[in-house]
Image (cartoon, rainbow, N blue to C red; front, side, top):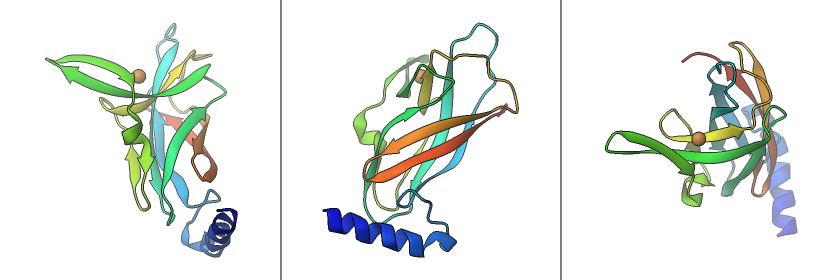
Length: 145
Ligand SMILES: [Cu+2]
């Protein structure tokens, strides 16, 4: 196992020019969130995680300096009533060549215990932990979409 991982790292270094990140081939390609009104202490982050490597990976968790905790949530609709809860682990798998796409009314990273309101143009660091790959530091852009 140890040997296989080392070979993977060497392959990644060789592919750096071709866009292989420093994370064993897992990259965050789009990360954004909306501005928050004053007094709101949570926010939904939307990130798209791509596994450009040859080995499967999996989302393990995330942290951000502006959130007490970050948890993956899935929004669902039942008779037009929206609710959200913990995302099932199946949607957090990253097959080789696969992606996890987050978007409004679907999968998102819930930032709980937001330390300050998010303003348009802010950039927030989010560390994404991945199985079998180095963590990816993503920059979440605050913008109205
Ligand atoms: Cu949520």
